[in-house]
View 1: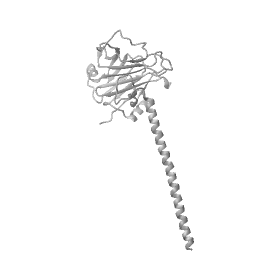
View 2: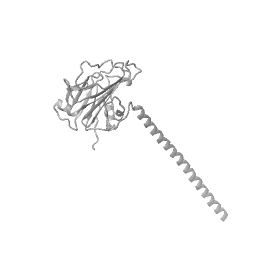
View 3: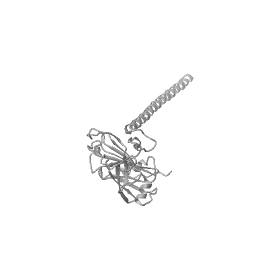
Length: 257
């Protein structure tokens, strides 16, 4: 009897040891798979970040003809009722301090140069036209400057003027990737910024932190891009996704600091 009980004890201990070993192996495999999944996710995010960058990513927005920093901001579809996802343009808007920043990019299938001279801007219901025009070295309008049939390159010799050519301290970069504008080339891009204070002076209003600002280009699409709130940084993604899903105009709201 004692031998039989001793044998049972040893057998039970052996079973427990095997069970613990099996559990350890299962958790090790699961841990490895979880870690591998996490590594894959990180790699995917890194690759996505690389693919979204079309220039050096800076810590803030910079008007330089490189658009990588815009990847952290949501975008809106700009089109005239196109059902082809490849035929929609993109628009973005942001505020940093006293500067209002705007970025538009043409779809790759668009076979003409972007028409970027005329823009509409509305601040809390008050509207005016913005003109992007060639400028001389002193910032004055160069009425004989070239705006069309531009070759490949980044063009910085433009300014932004409100209404009948009131200077609002505009800074512009316009990029042509494919001068022939073939369907296999990349569409044009533009980014510009203006002084909020000078715009407010021109409109005769105060632009407070809750102001709603909309910018559109009637030559590109019916929609505009809209921002509501205070300056800078990445915007609330969930709110943006809902706004983008409901229409062509999007609204950004800043988180309170």
